Length: 484
Ligand code: GDP
Image (cartoon, rainbow, N blue to C red; front, side, top):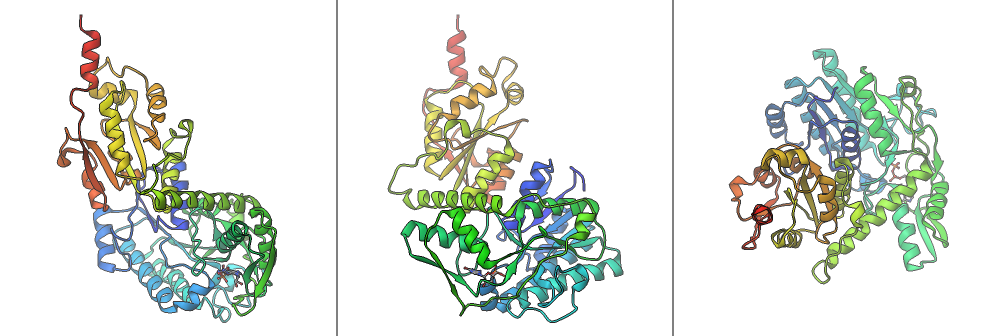
């Protein structure tokens, strides 16, 4: 896999997929194929096949799955089994048919027998009965590993499988009914702290032990395995240590700053007693985890708090004026930082707007454009043409101010929430990376001529042509300034 590879990250909006995308972008992989469920339903084999025929990915990281915690698995067994079987079958079959060079399938440590010897090595697969509560998900994932092994043996298809420990991190699901234990505890202790509740209820006896892996560590491992691993044997990815649920509850309680009690609800299931992974195989191949649990819980709690702020802003948007959450200094930044910020906003349910321009001398037309654009969204991202790009479009005498100066001035707008400088003639690639819900340009354009309009509309977004303020333009201003 190299920088030019066309990489399809299936499930890129989920906990794992979004971390994989963050990591790939950070490592300089730009050629990412990202589709949400509205674009391609991966349970639909024909639609998946057509998507592969149209886009021809060279590499696939399959993070698309129906996932959930112990209660969700127990409650919706048919969904967990049927949907995961369908998604992985259509993906593996389409990938093989359309010549994908390498395919990474992600499973989970729950594929191993309930009473497997600890720490669990990859060889324990299918050596005993599964844990009752999540057998549906486990059976589907085992079938995925086996399907890849079968494709490798029959067709020489290069598919590999990774089995992570219990994952957590930014972008996790905090819904108390469907989430896993770690985000559930963060939310429970936070809400108890806010309300002053005397105690927090933790499901089960507190005795089961779990191994928690930060999702950014897993994303790094995915990249490592795509580069260095090629075998039909699944490979475990964990942090090498586990902790009891009671100890985890005490840790989260301390980090959240809650001072009440903890009670255990033994009417809820414990699930498997322990599932510590043996990670010798991946460690021997040169990868090791880097995010300690305490540090990971602190940053995930912070992510949760940020997402709550975003939700409150959305809920209050109609009644109160919108205020940008960031100071001007924090608004501009490299693409990766801004994209991850946008990711957080989107997860918080916020509507993302985008506009772009040279903005080398600001006038009331620009103020009005920003105001109209911000009124149509919850967070406005501005693409700023780089100095080279402005010269290309407007000639060698422009821009009047360099990009750092232009970014500083634009950042002071309360209507602007984020700024990214882009090169080239058009912001097309930037728009594809941002995937705005609303794309805004001045009404001197028509919808047909707005760059990125097709892309945005195809992804369920809309294009807004902002009213122009008569009599203002940068070109006219410069002409007045330079008139003899
Ligand atoms: P599992 O690893 O597949 O069992 O998935 P979970 O993360 O859902 O559960 C792990 C353990 O945490 C189980 O023993 C649960 O009973 C326990 N647990 C304690 N409190 C909670 C909670 O609020 N939510 C969840 N999902 N699990 C909890």
